[in-house]
Image (cartoon, rainbow, N blue to C red; front, side, top):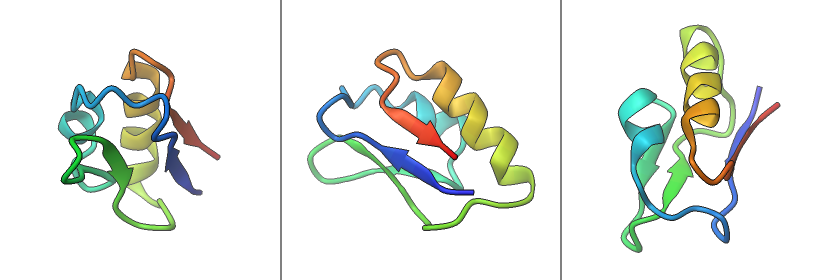
Length: 62
């Protein structure tokens, strides 16, 4: 699976990095980004939870 953060929608709240730190991190601009191209194993559930927790729906996991 892949995780993607839409930089135009991200407000930098950091919820995704808190929920799934192995999948998401924050860049120097304070916006979230996906750490790896592919998400697998237990990280898939964490990535989906982060996407569900995103207040602006900036995260896509597919």
